[in-house]
Every structure is written in structure tokens, then in C-alpha cells.
Image 1 (cartoon, rainbow, N blue to C red):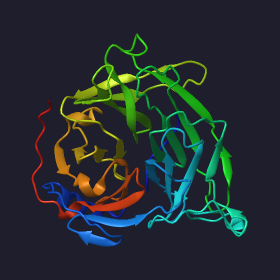
Image 2 (image 1 turned 120 degrees about the vertical axis):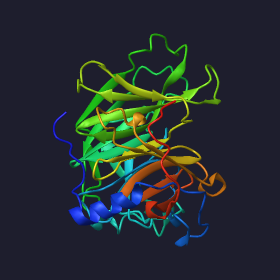
Image 3 (image 1 turned 90 degrees about the vertical axis):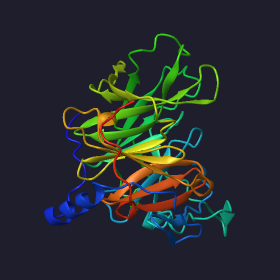
Length: 337
């Protein structure tokens, strides 16, 4: 798939100190209610106050443009991305600020709301997560609530400059399929993915399981890897690992140094250390961090700000910052259910 190496690293000494801090930690449920208010590890830092951003489902931090995060809506949100800053303010190309505005009302003084950066040659059937590596955005059109879709895949987009470009195009679409799925809908409803990440130039996916034929959640997730990049035929995913205790992963992201994987569920953060051998992240040492769902609500997106800080977004457009240096329980070890 070419070189998709992740973000530049901080100095060795800072990285070592931060990793040492992380080696013995987990957290209790702590949170903040108001914007820019911190309680413990979790800080509510803002809300994306822009009507076209109606259901955040993915977030990725730019490594090229300063203070830029890419977010997208869930299914039905149009083939577009929105660039926001660290506080949730939507970014519009400089030369278009006199034509569009940010806010809630559809038209003010003749200016409609900014529709976002359009991704041409693509379709948002059910975009569920986004990752960024080496200047490329990977948009997972992998939502499959009824486990009947035959058009799953990933759009590859060269990251545009959000302050200069109103639209770009998908470079390619990589259609994918699960090796175990023979029927549509599947006999087991294990073929819905809302979480993807990049590790060592490969794309990975985590599945969300349901009781067959129902919307009810079922514990368990499978980890798959994309080993090919065909555009003219299906890319069959490779099963890497699985767990039976993770319920509905909604997003995932690998740390800038490639040593930690954050998996987001509706009520917890699951932090895995890099496996000693291979790429089965689900077999690594685990720290499970409860989240206060009454405050974080339906969290759907996660990315790393740096080696010790995670950024989380929910469907209600709230943005949270999570400081991993303030957690206080030991890892659970290498056991894998």
C-alpha cells in the first residue's frame, strides 16, 4: 500500500518519561461537565457548533497542518469532511469566508453554512471511522448494521489543506470482504466495523457484534488486517485476533510512537500495549479505563494528541481530552479471553 508511516516522534528523553508513566496505570470514572473544565483525567474542551456536523463518527489529527483535526458524520452525512481546531471551531478556506459561515442557522446575511470539504468520487453509505498516516486519510465505509452489505471498503484521500482547498477527490476505493462471511446477511452478525487504524503501513479493522437479526449488542470483537490494495476486485481481510470481552468498539487509534492502541467503546477506553511478537494487538497488555457515559454519552471517535493525551468525540459533537498520566491502576496483564 506504499509508505504510510505515522507521526514524527518527540525527543527520546520525553518519550521515555511518558512511557514510564503509562506502564502502571488505569483510571476511575472522572469527567468534566462544562467546556474547558477539567475533573481528573477527562476534560470537556469544546463543542463543534456547526449544524452540518450532526453526528461525529470519526476523528483524526493532522500531522501536516497545525491545529487541524478531521471529523466526519455517520451514514447519510454526505461525502465530506470537516476540519476543526483543538476547541472545535470549524475551519473554512480563507478565500471562502465571505461566502460561507460557521454556526447553526442555515443562512445569515445571505451566507449559507460551510458544507465541509467535499470528497469527490466517493459516497458516504456508512462512514464509521477515519485514520491518517503519511499524508493520507483513510475513510472506512464499513458500517454494516444489518450485516448484508456487499460494498464495504475504504477510501484513500490525500490530505488537503483545509485553509485553502474546498474540495478534493478520492484517489482510490479499496473494496473489502470478510473471509468468513458466506451469506448476506450473515448467519452471525459479526461483520460490522466502526473502528480502523494504521500500523506499520497496514490498515486494521475491529468488528462490532450483534445478536443475529437484532440490534442488541453482543460481546466480542475480531481484529482484521488489509493485506492487499486491489481496486478492481475485493480485498479479502486477514483475521489477526479476537476477544470475547470487548463490547461494541466504536473507534481505534495507534499512538504516535506505535507502542499503544486505544480502542473506544461506549463506556470504556481499552489501552493495549504493542504485542511482543506479531501484530495481534488484542493479545497485548491491557489497561481498561471506565468512562462516565452519563457525561460522555455516545462516544464514537478517538485519536492521539500526543503520547499521553487522547482526544475523544461523541455523536453529540462534544470534544474531550483525556490525560493518561492521571490514571492510577495497574495493567491487567497478557491474559486474553
